[in-house]
Image (tube, rainbow, N blue to C red; front, side):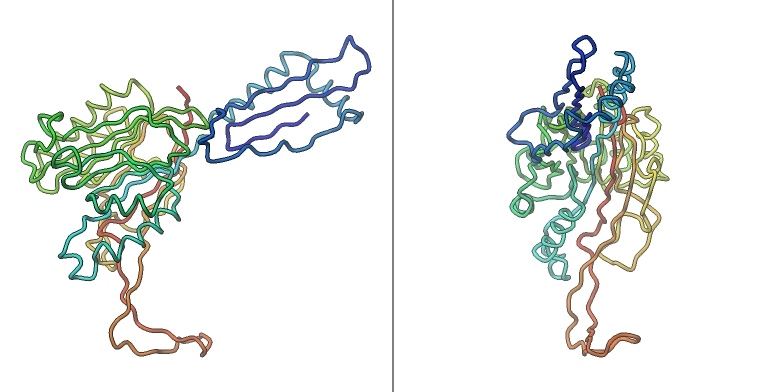
Length: 375
């Protein structure tokens, strides 16, 4: 008997018996892969590991004992299938990358300096899918060029094309099949491109996608947004609108919502999401957590806050295995910094004083989640 798993969803079972008598020779059982025969799949099938040979007497005895009845065989198969269904791991995240502007460049935080660091972060985290915020068209082009494994959905908030900032959803094209996508504005007229809602200072857009995992066939919805930084009423009513859209659109399928909400975990507007009965905060639900700081840093790596304004909300159908606020930085040289030696270090090593910088004025947030219920 040979059993193996590939990518948590592929099961093959072969049962072979020595042909002692035709009367008790079972029919070999072969279960097909649950993964589609898709040339776009990013992983090739693994070879079957060798099992017992036809003439192995112990194999014959063991298999007849273990699988003596159809009922017992069925139980074994169902348990294996259940394990495969439950293990559908996704690495998801949210990252406000800060818009490209001249003021930041004058302060040493320009997009051209930060972009390579951000792309290295994304590749190291290895997001399967993530939402970004404050992305202008030139930034979108740079990210897609540096991260060719990702495709995206999303439009500019000003005109519904590429005007102004985007709140794009980046997803690995080889892992996911895009089933549906669209955008709506966080306003009283959500279908009107560029519309501002309530007391918002700027137009605010929410982009969404319905996707299917090519390997596990899991279907889910992903929403990504950036709420207004000024309008309190716009955030309050916008939160209600988002929850309403989830109820109307998703039909009970699993949902992930990411974004810069501009409210922290102590705000009443945060409660709109976590008391909806539809969503939970991945920070709260995480089995393991690494979050020694909040999510906003104002480009100053020495600042600390308890506030989390960038959130990952998920359906109860997802178990959250890990959660992290990733406070990575990079360094730029200081002028006229002299070489120095470190204490308790080999004297061959030279050190210089560099300035530590943040890749954005927000830290990226990542969560590893598993779909524990398949629709």
